[in-house]
Image (cartoon, rainbow, N blue to C red; front, side, top):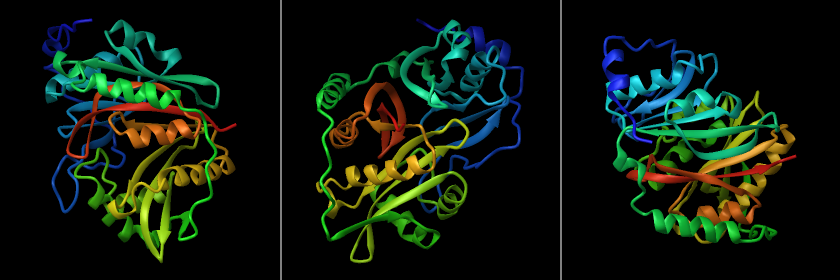
Length: 311
């Protein structure tokens, strides 16, 4: 559906953005590591936005008014020149977004409390961004991966040990993330970010060989909704091709079940054959594709959503 931007941009241009006390502010900037976007509260919701991915990501509706927020997000996007909004919304609050021209890109059953559906709803403010330039290829990857049977995982080779990371690992973790990713939507190379998230709602896991970390991943928990994102997978170049991501994922699932998480999901690079196969082999189901969604590894890429019940 074409979007009439004049509907939003002209009247809202006279209204300043109302920002509430921010949570984890990392303004778009260059520092020693990644350039990242900003996470903050806006109109009662938690959003991630900035010039890196040129989009707004509604991460949590929280206390926002679902009837006014869809338009307010478009106004914010217009003022900042963003070309996409992607909203993570409970299905029961989706109608105001759909009526505003948003469209469903993906869904995760049981996202809230193991019962209620979550939708990823997108609005494109630039028609060019709505079309994935590699759409045929990423479609084939998704179909191929989804057709794979759930297969058991052999034990990890004896030379590797998988364990949960601690604050003592943060320096090594930062170095690995900086080496693996030319760009990333969140500042996972920032030791302060790693420590703060580790102390609140993220469990980081690593593969160690000879006392040195060679691969990482994280489990980012919604402690209220009991869903967990399996994310931030990174393996140093010399140790790729050994299935370490799949071994990490199995260990992470065990840990998340013990913590009472009910639904696991990931937002994986759609063009990454290896990561899509990893989640398919682990029994995850394909939930949809977020087109031209995230600046990762040096450019904006489409992302595939995979999900799995843990209970």
